Length: 204
Image (cartoon, rainbow, N blue to C red; front, side, top):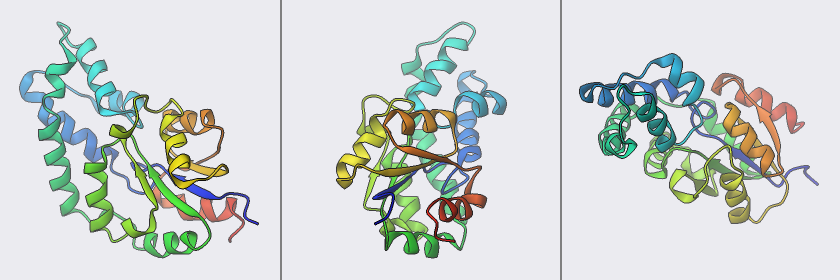
């Protein structure tokens, strides 16, 4: 009997190193309205956090402070830019498809992200790996985002499981998985994903 019924993957920084692309797209659409987004700020405060929270922080630290809703109005432009850039890139490691296929024969699989499903689902499909996931949970699916437990609890509810392994790279995501009552496996990124997961699940 497997120790876990499901494996729940974060998206950005776990399945795909897309955080620098998210940053670049936000920086580009914010610059014309006089808001400068630095990589160091985004790296420390924006990774694993839902877009609205990033913009609330940016609005508060602007001089003078701005209404975050004004910045949120730029989200459609950022989303379009992100999708265009991801479509131009070979986004996934070539070995990821086989790795997920191996896991899916043993566990239910889900993606649990703070990004919108409308952003990540096309990328998963274009990469040919969307079929491996039994459900996708995005930022629009929950009221309380990571580090709250809601995203991972919703994924488990949809899958009908009680024992899950959460795979995360950000502090907010790891806190979310732990708050949901699941074991959390920290990875540094897509490069060590396969080795870390297979090792923890005793599949090496």
